[in-house]
Image 1 (cartoon, helix red, strand yellow):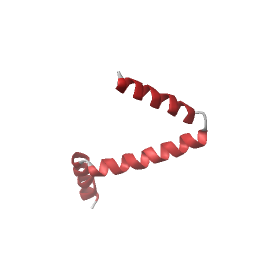
Image 2: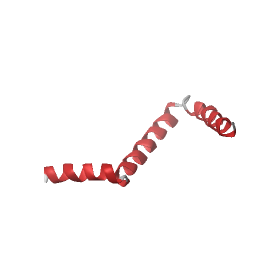
Image 3: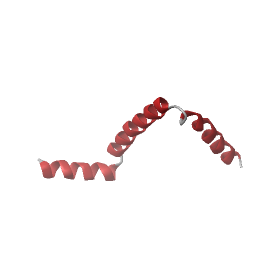
Length: 57
């Protein structure tokens, strides 16, 4: 149950962010940036990107 308490606490804190469109936009841009970086790090997706670049080449 301690994990559930932590997760619920995070949702309560994050619900305050959704009230402001500016904070939501900042959060969205940050998540998009981090998502793009993660895709480059994962070996499977990196191979897909390299194949696409080789085809354009």
